[in-house]
Image 1 (cartoon, rainbow, N blue to C red):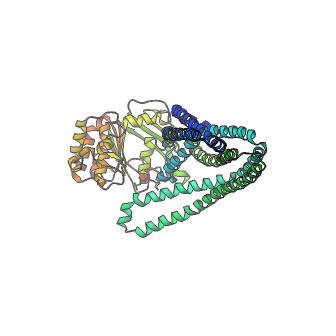
Image 2 (tube, rainbow, N blue to C red):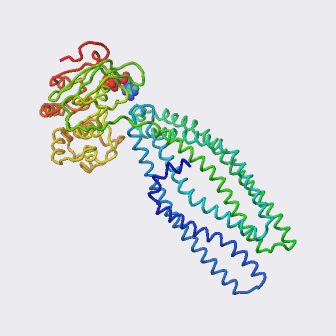
Image 3 (cartoon, protein in one colour):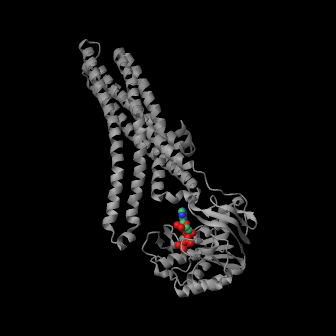
Length: 551
Ligand SMILES: Nc1ncnc2c1ncn2[C@@H]1O[C@H](COP(=O)(O)OP(=O)(O)OP(=O)(O)O)[C@@H](O)[C@H]1O
């Protein structure tokens, strides 16, 4: 089965806990299978001998069975949680590792909450299905075999009657198989979208408050619920119909058992004790058959999740070569053309060379491709451009760009993002080593009094938090870039939220370090433009054959 094969790698690591889970289930199962037999025998012996000794022995047996059952079910639960939670995390991490390396434009029309919810819920369904299936199939099959053996010893006609139920149940399952899958898929998809809408309600709290858009936001939430609700109804209806059919089958079978069983007792072919044993075992058999029927439903559920995961994993990872670089002296773009998703061309036949020791400024009207140029240089859009991009005469498609970006390129984005972590961990994010003295130095250079934060540098901050200003966010991003001390520095609008004194300090740093670096700055700030060695104007350079630099 493909689901088992797929999940095996992540689940097998926890085989010890799965084995203990199975073992405790088998012990608990043995107790439950013994109980009806002991009860039936007790009734017959009591009717026959009427002795207190029998009462004492059976009471002790019952107590022992009860205690063992409770202990094993606690243990079974504990081992299950250990195995399932770990396996689920493992699978989740594996999928996320893949997703993080998929080409950037995949995320254009994907909402991160939707994706996360989808991956998380599918990993949960798959791992619990696989881990539960294994012991459950064993135990329910054993139950069927053991009980059929006991039944055939007691009364062969009732046994045959029960055997007829199996094909009837199979027929019912076949009838529901397709709708369960289809409605299950639809339900999971709309659930993921609904949660993404729900997340937006508080994620954009600033936007809602500033525009007093409470009604609009509530209406949006209501609309998304109205889209989600029909799929909940459809899926619940089919699930309910499925389980109702199961209940009807149970009642019909019970009536048959009572009718024939009663007749057999009247005809003295069955004792009351034997009938009690058969009746309890009969319930267990119905539970088993119902398990196999529901196993079909769980399988369809797991299949939906499996297919949704495979759909994600079928997206190939982005290109990342193997050659490693120790330093970057030149970056060359040769005849580079680029457009987003085949829409209008943003960059056409653009050639340019960036050299160590110089500061380059990129200017141009909004939307003319300044940030896009930076992303092309960084290799973020590696799948999509035409032409060639070289670092030190090596085409970037041959380079291990993850390694290169990690070690020798530093970027400060136009709208820097924060990790939900401390200030310290945010400004050292992705760095292998750093010196506390450098952190202090840069905090001073950018006039940041870290003591203003509740817990200083260990204060927790996060993307939507209100305890940090736009300028502070930008400064953390700049400090992170300078701490790395990379060969290539790319700053996208670094002055947009900085005070004049901080801009002057930034200019001083840039001039001080430029000798050993390629510095590319997207900006319209005149003071920065004054220190630039070359200026690229994207309003002219990208869509015509006019000279590509101004200064
Ligand atoms: N991920 C994307 N998918 C599709 N189109 C995009 C994407 N990112 C940017 N664009 C479009 O590409 C064009 C260039 O965008 P880019 O961000 O490079 O411009 P910019 O010059 O940096 O703009 P600004 O001065 O406003 O920051 C814009 O029209 C923008 O809408």
